[in-house]
Amino acid sequence: MDILDGITPLLDRYDGFVVDLWGVVHDGVTAYPGVTEALLLVRERGKRLVFLSNAPRRSWVVERQLAGYGLGPDHYDAVVTSGEVTWELLHGRTHPWFAALGRRAYHLGPATDLSVIEDVELDLVSQVAEADFLLNTGPDPALGPTSTEPYREVLAACAARNLPMVCVNPDREVVVNGQVLLCAGAFADVYREMGQREIFEVGKPDPTVYGPVLRRLGTAPERTLAIGDGPRTDLAGARNSGLDCVWVLNGLSAALAPDSLDALAAAEGVTPLAALRGFRV
Image 1 (cartoon, one colour):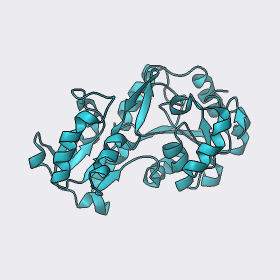
Image 2: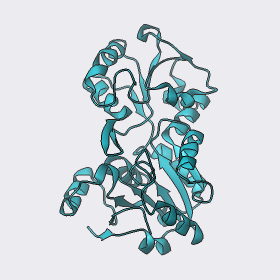
Image 3: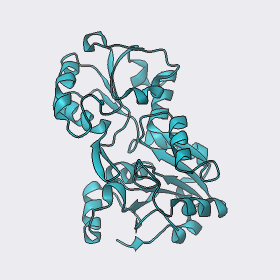
Image 4: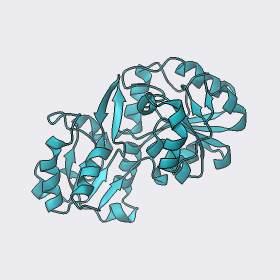
């Protein structure tokens, strides 16, 4: 697989860019070196750029986080998060799966993720026995972000009642300032191990989340490039949506050996055009 140093060789070929955030633009603490310059170059060339993140929070929350990194409207056109799409699905109830959900949710995750249900006709309940479904946004601060073991008891209680799970972040893990932490997708895996199949994972690689992105971009799919560090989310999502993609060797992929990339891509069933050493000029 070809490895490019930055995005400059790709700019003439595409009009729109779908860019992952965590592991591509920032590490959860700070923006990576060269990101600001790369974003400004994309905009200077007249291209469109939308961030697509599996963050289990509304887009406005992530926009506020980006502002803390010095990134604002001059650097991108829009932000779409799995939390935003989840909010739309819960609020509108037009999707058949979501239309069938009840109105009482047991929340697994931190209170900081509850923007996904703001202004939604929904009751959060404190007991699994009172819930119609399980809203999974990620690790609970009381149970910790490094192991699924402390979560098995509550997941087993939900499974015993066959509660559908809304998983607001399909990622299994994320790298935060060099430390690997769990995401909501890891708990979805445990729930499947318990025999549960009523799980809706909102976010990449599900093509559902790419519709809002392409509408905001306004570019033809064949002239749109997806950029991400996760083969099973970013790259697979691009494949599922008919978009070209490149693989950023940062975040979850920072430790990969260059000679292993082709085999790993084949194992995931993805075909990135190239790898990038970083999202930079």
